[in-house]
Length: 341
Image (cartoon, rainbow, N blue to C red):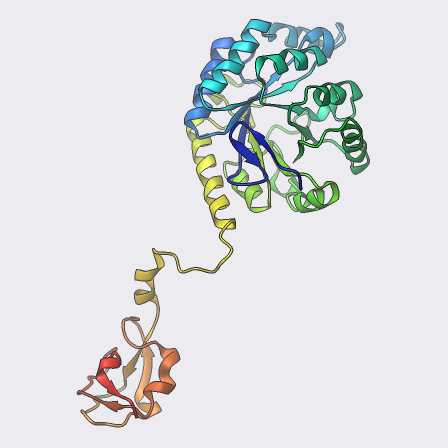
């Protein structure tokens, strides 16, 4: 299994990296994009992703999408500044670039990694560009068949690329206003993809659920991306699946907690369980009064809460013992009350 660094985070090792997939929530407003970088840092994310496009490289001019993306373009200087701001905030700057010339610009600007958008998985021009950048990258596989993933993985490997990961996910924005339903997320495929391609596999969360990143981590995701918006009230692109900054912080906390849990391979008694053992477990108690010097019979014992006496699993050792002092009915007694037979 190949592993690689993005910023200070080792992909496939250590705690799960969180890449906030910003998408288009900034609507081309540079100050908002900068605010999102700060919000991502405060939320505890490891990286932030921006989708960046040159409309002339992305849409035919007659399509409505051309004017939308044209209005949201950042200048080269603004893109470089975003990368610098992310670094200063302690975040890996991940770029989902929709143009080979943007890949070249971002490589020079210190981009930590690229994400090949699901729409470009079958685009040899974009695959070749990210390979030539020598930067780590993700292949996003929503919309894709296994044959298409096979083709993309083979192409990047033919270019000598080995520092990449797959991002499982689903994209139904054109047909759903509520995001991907939980039952359609295919989290069970993470292990299959990891075995099939021998690379880390992450998850692009296009659900509306705050808990889904934690579920993805439990399923084995090495990376999780989640949409964020400063405020859903703006009703920007994908607003219905975005978390606001406070919600994002909680999603990160939950996912990190699950990460810690699945890395614990031994069955341990958690420190907080020790008081509960005394409350929840049972003790060996006397059914009736037992005088000092009495040899105990099995039918004179019962098992009752609380668990602050001898554990029921030691009942065979208690039977035939002799009382060292009088024992009251229902008393959870200890070993100091007995003399061995």
